[in-house]
Amino acid sequence: MNTKKRVFSGIQPTGKITIGNYLGAIKNWVAMQDQYECLFCIVDLHSLTSDFNPEELQQNIKYNIALYIAAGLDPDKVIIFQQSKISEHLELAWILSCFTQMGWLNRMTQFKDKAGKNKETANLGLYSYPVLMAADILLYNANIVPVGEDQKQHIELARDIAISFNRKANIEVFTVPDVLINSKAKRIMSLKDASNKMSKSDPSDLSRINMSDDEDLIRKKIRKAKTDDIEGISYDPEKRPEISNLIDIYSCFTGIDANEATNNFKSSKNSEFKEYLANIIIKNICPIHKEAIKILEDKKYLEQIIKDGIIRAKAIAEKNISKVKQIIGIN
Ligand code: AQP
Image (cartoon, rainbow, N blue to C red; front, side, top):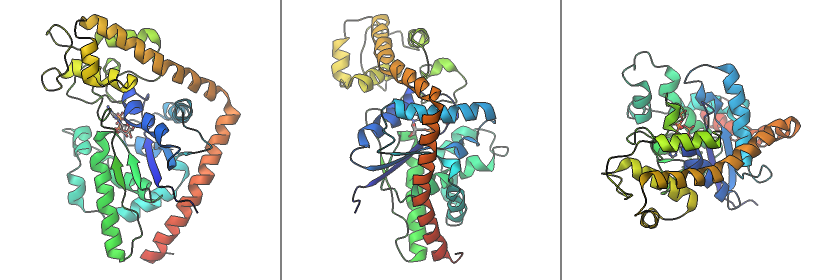
């Protein structure tokens, strides 16, 4: 009998994967794959809540799958799959929406951030996004959901929905999932405005490092990253958010604690530290991107991974949705 706890997580193929997504999510997933039974998803249905670009979406889906593997996920150990291929996600999302209070959704800060002042014209999918996310997690009865801090509120909502459903059904249908946040990389901030998180969909490409950026571009972006007028390197996220964010990125890639890193660079100029940081980023991410491109070129291999992921995810999803349907009386 498989006694391993189950892990579920995913990334939207909305744009180019950033080092925020890598450090906040993928790097942790790789570290978890031996200890847990893992499902890692390309959440393409979620990405329909933002701009519509079919060609780019197709490319991003394939690139993301290749990147997961290139970053170290072993498709023999973990299930890598495309969300839209498993229709049970949508079925469960509708069912769960009937167990979700509007007031809960009204509190979601991601909707407020993304819709901004345009709440009336924002699409319904953006509003109900957290319910689909709850369906993604609960469909597989995941015990643990490793995410960056920005997604914590959504996992808490998934917990509330699971508890609400279980209570009404009077039986523990869904596992109530726990959130797991890597405290070091919980929120990598924008290179242009350290009050915003680094994000795929930020209109400024200079605000982020994409996993697909080449050496020159990475150097340029780090050189241009906003810093303050204070001389020298010191770590103070409150007073010096920009330089502290760069130290955090350094720390995440090297494993060296932020205070120790600061000490190592205390007599360096900003420009020297930035040069060093750019080299560290290049050393860590450029080989991953190169490997992802190789995987993408091996079309047969990639197709096989995609097919295999569908079969393995579907087997769990079908079993669980039929149990849910039976409980609510639509079997
Ligand atoms: N800046 C970040 N620091 C740490 N973790 C982050 N994550 C995202 N940004 C950071 C984590 O990456 C995973 C995948 O996120 P997502 O694609 O599902 O959506 P998101 O959280 O909204 O990420 P983005 O990059 O900001 O995407 P867009 O711009 O498309 O909305 C999650 O675990 C997330 O926490």
